[in-house]
Length: 366
Image (cartoon, rainbow, N blue to C red; front, side):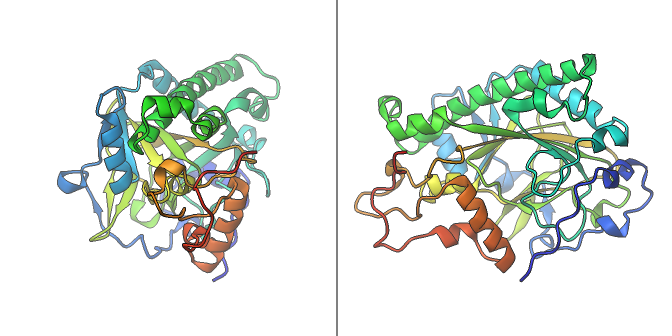
């Protein structure tokens, strides 16, 4: 079926959300097939896995969480609390700026960066949120669009975002090695593996800043539509206000992810499911809003560079079997995903190969 039009990137629709007394028609969310499932608390069998990255058993815990959930809470990561607190403070200040200042950075059609909705989502209505996407390594150039004259406010914002980027990028390489260990690789094999090294060294990072304002009719609005991430994996720093939900099957229900102090949420993306030959799965997730409190979240997306072909790792392909997916670059995958969205199909299913498909399961050297 044809996809509905993507909302324009202008900043104006966001700025009045906090003062709204009702949800306007532009933001009245039409429930999709997955939106009818009940929401449940993260207790009992629905308790979201918690992984201590410094624990000797971290690889086993990661494997179990990645296979069963495609997401987990990460603790013991060593990111200073002042860094995450500083990010939340700066995001709140950014979205509190007057509308004309944010509008200077409004995302235009075809642009990946700027103030506005994520460009890969086709949405029938506007979401109850404000957002800003940018390359994590280019914060100073990007936010000159908001603060063209620079100044102390600009410098403080950039300093905090850069420190967050450095911490997350280092943690990303560390967690990637834990994932490799979860696939059965030893430390020596990880260190010697050419493909593993190339993936680790070329990880690209994108940040998305989200504000979900309190909503007068939360049952009629959606903070972020249900989706899977496209890259390898995402770190989510969030304020202590619940809102992120993961879809669990059998029976289908949305599990609300808790926000314990100091914990990061890790969400696996589609290209990581491909990289691990389907063993670790991407997680369908969404963000809901509430009546009482604003919520801030900062996803930090990690994925391959645009020219790196991603295919199942040899360590993820069982002996005597072929790779389950064909090699694809991130831009190629996004093209497949675009086609899948238009036909209500699965992008990963469109990339699956038959048994007579490609051998080895290792991305070709470039």
